Length: 82
Image (cartoon, rainbow, N blue to C red):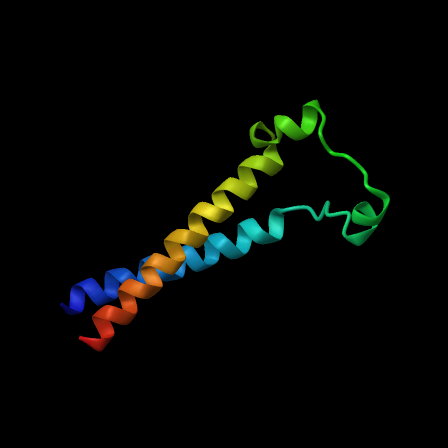
């Protein structure tokens, strides 16, 4: 059981670093409240194909690693309680 704890802690650390690096690499392109007030539309070709760009891939991998981080955190808490 001790080996599983060590492996999960190492995986947790790697996921933590991965999420942090990916979150810091993303650019802030949020228009905020001004786009809500002015009603600017982002329904164009580039917005529809955003998942294929570098920013789209970074966002997708950040979400994937974030979910894996949460799952590994839950697994660690279950193992340490038992």
